[in-house]
Each structure stands twice: as structure tokens, then as C-alpha cells.
Length: 290
Length: 290
Image (tube, rainbow over all chains, first blue to last red; front, side, top):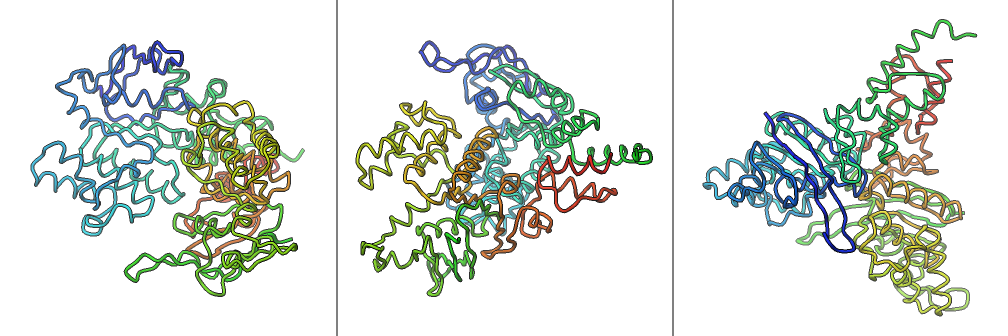
């Protein structure tokens, strides 16, 4: 089933002024339910503008965006759209504002005008899912949580809306290594258990290549690459041209090639690299004593 | 020569209602003039508290604890009992001028709307003559490669550019030490690299750099890494020494090159110590495959 369909989407900031800037230029993109898509591109390439179209935060100027077949311009369905597409912004913990975690998580469902019992159920469930058990965290102030816990509380607020599509903008920014591991595990769990379609905007090519099964690269408001991480990052010339980082493992593969050790350009994870080198060593090991 | 010396420093936050939080416990170490030190540790390990002690923004909360900067005890300047060679009183201002801090968020470190006015703010405040201010602002902006932006509004700059302006503001005070308190955390990869290369360059010119970071690749660029855990120094040594230990005990990850070398070790590769970057890693692999 098609979750998102974007057709000929163009968006221009400050139209008809001297600072006019084309942020999106004729973008076409279809995303199926169940996909994990990483949207990459350097700062100013149009990533944020693109994802803000998904729940109607930005009004389409030309072209169209459909979510599960409904155009985002349909005013009667705007509210439903906001519930269906859960947006976790950069540093979402800055948006916590209630005096207890439970109230903060309940804010969205309350706005949905759900019955009280349903709100309570959702808050319980969302808090358990993100690893902040209700009994321990419900009455605590969000401001006395650790950085990683705050971010999980903010994500719980989005999950309590029971979105069908989860959009995450730089979910790992500013976290310590433990926090990065926790949020990574959480995103994979949410994808598995509650929200099968995930779109992640990121500058971190290592996490894009490790987590996503599809990478969409933007440059100057246009989609310049779209495919499996192996395919997209395998095209080193393009990655360099559009100013993206080559993932760590791919950089090692390139350096090895420079030294005459040629491995598959599609290798992206440490596991794949280790097994390729193991094989290489066994194949050449016997005759290397020249 | 030791430029900063910490002796038995405790720092305890008072949380009110008789509750308190011990952020630093009996911390003792010194930092050599001209060195490049990375300060790492998970959230809550005491890194940011420590960086504020280094320029006298915070003072040790125990009686015996001392922070000595260029021979000046930060506690005594608060009492007004310190005099320099000419009998002039040495104040907390003098300590802050010696140790500048660049903070995390590029959006809340600037005071003026225009780049050069912002950089001039510090020198103006200490009452320098006009020509001296102009000279300092010009050279500070050149050091960070922002001279062409001097007339621009700060608000129109990218995150990396804003951090460069913040560094220029610190440089205009002619400090001996610059503390980067997670100054790269909110930047994109390009911005991160810019800040790291400026930090390296300033260090080459003789400025002591203390880099607080969660990014192990950045830490690996330092001459020395101090790992903080629960308010205490857990490890202290060169990147090679530190990353040959199990740093995961302290909530850290290994740089990807070190991790890869360790995994290759499990399939029969043998490296000479910890591989701390991709260049070393590739060299180490090549040696064993030729």
C-alpha cells in the first residue's frame, strides 16, 4: 500500500522578493507502507522543507502530496493528517512543557478529543513503549529527566497519537553514545510494533546506511539519488559531487582499493568488511610471501 | 609547564529541600600549556560542570578544592586578595580572559546583530582603545575565516559559521586556553570539520585546547583524552592508550576504526595497539595482506 505519494512538488521561499529561494524543484517520490527511508542531503538541500509537507505544516504551492491516498490540501482531513503523520522534530525535548511526563504525553491525544479512558490507555502504552514505565515516570517533571529520557518522553508524545507514518528529523543530534544506542533501538522497535513506515532526515551517513532500507538524496531541491543504501553510497562520484560524507566503512574500502586491495564497493557495515577481509586474507594468505 | 592545575576539587549542586547532587568528586589533574585535551564521558559525568570550573564561572564547593589557572587560584580572586606583580588586584575577569569558552548552541552565544559588532563586544567591555579593538576583531575574524562576513547579520549565517563567530569573539580577548563545550554537537558534518580544523590550527599557534565532545573521532584527534565517569577521572592518556581499554564501561563507544580493528582481531588479524583512525587501520590491514 502506498503511504506517501509526492507528485511534481515545487516550493519557493520568499517568492517574488530578492531573497527568493527554490527549496524544492519538481520532486516526485512514492513511499510504500513498511519502508524505512533515510532522507539525506547537505544543509539547505530541501530535506526539512520536504518532510514538513508531509503533514501539511507547509502548504503546497505547486504539485501535490497524498498520504494514504488523501491529498494534504483537503481541509476536512487536515486534522486526521496531523495524527497520521507523527513528526519528531530536531531536539524534540525542547518542546516538553507540562509539569509531569504523563500530562506532556497526553497533550496530543487530548487535542484529538478522545474519551478520557482512551487517552489514559494511550499514554500508558506510549510510555511503556519508549521505556519510561508509567508507574515510575508518570508524575515526574520532564525537566528533571536525563537527556536521553527527555527525548524518549518527547517521542512518546508523538507515539500516543498512534501515527501511521513516523517522521524523525536528526533523531540522534546532541546525544551521548549511550543515548544514540537507546534511540536507535527505540526507532527499530517502534517500526516493528507500532508504526511500520519510518522517514528519517539525517546528516549521519553511518546511521542512514545502517538503519534504512532506502536512501533518498536531495541536492538543490531535487532528488538526485534514490535506492538501496548499497546502490546510493556505491556511487561515490555522485556522493562526493552532492557534498555528502561517505560512510566510514566505505571510506575504508576506498583507501584499501588505493593500496591495491579491491573489495566490493557495496560494503557498508563493519560486519561485511570484516568478513570480506577475512575471505581476502584466506585467498591470498598462502602466496603473499614474495 | 602546567597551565591549569586542579587539586582535590569537589562540586556539589544544591537541589533545594536538603537534596544535593555530587557532580565532581576529588578531581585532581593538570593541563600542560599548548596541549590539546579531549574531555569525554556520558551525559551527567561532570564534563560541563568541569568546563565551567576551568574559568572560574563555578568554584570548588569543598574547602580544600583548588583550581589554579596560570598561577591564579580561582577562589582567591573572588575574595579580592590576589595582586599581580605591580600590586594591581587580579579579578575573576582576568581568569575569564585567559580561559574562553565556546558553548554548544550556535544560536545563543551572540549578543550583537552584525558579525563584527559581536566579535568587538568583549574587547569593548574591557575598555580597549578603538584601534586595538579594530585590530583584534580583524585578526580574530581572519583566524576563523569569517573576514568576508564582517558586515553580515549573524542571524543569516549557518550553524557552523555562527560557531566560528563565537570562536572569534573568544579569540578577540586573546585567551591562552579555549574550552569547546560540545561546540560541534549541533552542527552538520561540514560545520563539525570546520570547527575541528580551526581548533587544531589555533592549537598549532600555541593556544591550549580543551575539547568536550561525545564524538570519539573528534576525541581521537587530541594529544590526550580524559574520560570522566560519575564525577571522577576514569581514564587519562593518549588516544591509543585510552581506546585500547574497554571504554564501554564508562558509557562510551570506540571510534569506528578501533571497533573494526578489534572485530578483525577476532578473525585472526593482529594489530599493533589500538587503531584510532581510518588511515592507521588501513595501514595495519595492508601490512597483513601483503
